[in-house]
Image (cartoon, rainbow, N blue to C red; front, side):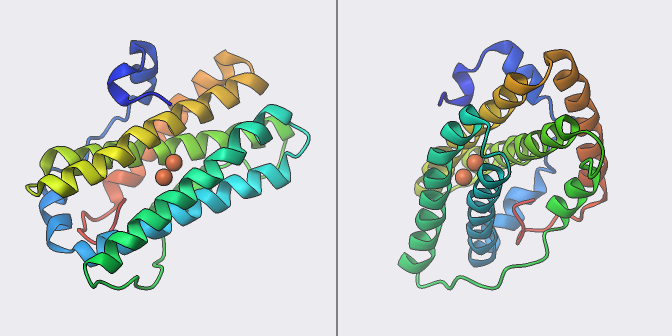
Length: 206
Ligand SMILES: [Fe+2]
Ligand SMILES: [Fe+2]
């Protein structure tokens, strides 16, 4: 998995999120560490469980199974890192909140129709979450004052950049590249609408 800086221009361009995070978000997040770490912990947990679901659903797609199996371990490792960070600071893992961002993305997923279309949307939704998370981690890594936390988030940023490209590559393994590109652009537009509607809150990763 490559760090963001080493990605090809084409890959970076496809990352292409249309709406950068509101710069005030980093200041808000800095003031609500327990909440933001709790929310982050659940994001990692959901990333692991989503990969498990994909493996169960697409058991016959060998490349998908083989590529996602280690990601489950990695995402779970991320969850444990965040949990350890909370505990080290005497903070508590709070309750899981309603994830409006992910719910909004989920609404855009093709539910019926061809299997190909459904697979494509599931992979692109995962890529979308990874891409936005990567952007958010970059904001934290660049914008926080605390040197330790800057490095802490940088590690996640690099990892999620690798995941984002993996999900796009998986989509291109099973589906025509043109179709993938076209649908990705629609996802980018949909994600921009969600981001516009969501309130900027320091206790949310998204
Ligand atoms: Fe992760
Ligand atoms: Fe990830």
